[in-house]
Length: 143
Image (tube, rainbow, N blue to C red; front, side, top):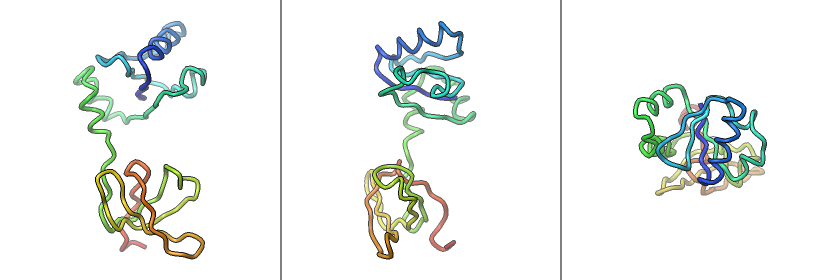
């Protein structure tokens, strides 16, 4: 299941496209979101998805949305990235450092960012990255 978020005008065009091709989707009470069962990146032209945010959600999360059909605000709050804890081992998966395949230890946690200590070219470096840009892969004691 996938959630697509973009402007209302573009959502209307996406809905027209999906109806024309008889692809299953669900509208929400919020005009700038729709739910799609299949990966939209594989079935829709890129010009329709340009500027749109596509989020994959689990089956469990999709049941929650269907249970409270259209109550997407609560779902989006649930989907906010949870802050990592100090001492956790993380991989940087987004932001400006995503292509460097860096792992590090969280040394500090702020309101929306965390300080990650990692090795870059043999030097210990502390990077500031957003919560959404890190994936917890363990605890520092597991190294």
